Image (cartoon, rainbow, N blue to C red; front, side):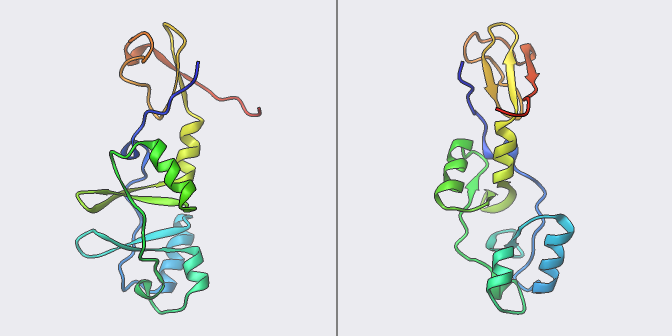
Length: 161
């Protein structure tokens, strides 16, 4: 029985997202990162569009008084409908730690490596046929026997191999 990941980015994204504006000072961004225990913050314009991202690396490696001076502008993003398998692949191939999730071109949430790892540790088992499914919630119907979501139970993952 192989577990399947059948979840979209919108289902596991964190929202609302801590953001900064292009004119937010570098000191204020550092404070935001520390206060919220995050490693980066999307930079959004007045319309809610992502114009950049400031990470811990950007704060350490670049000089400037505000977000617009130190932000990375080539931001890779996804939509809420992007399959988790595609999100995972982007995180690996692009060697990035988080992806802004856009809806109608505006920031709706963010998906991180940690969100994907947490998803991998969440397993549901069909009480009728034993089929396993990985995701934040059980599927609407079992892909094997078509039992309803109410027939699934949460399978706690034991530590270790």
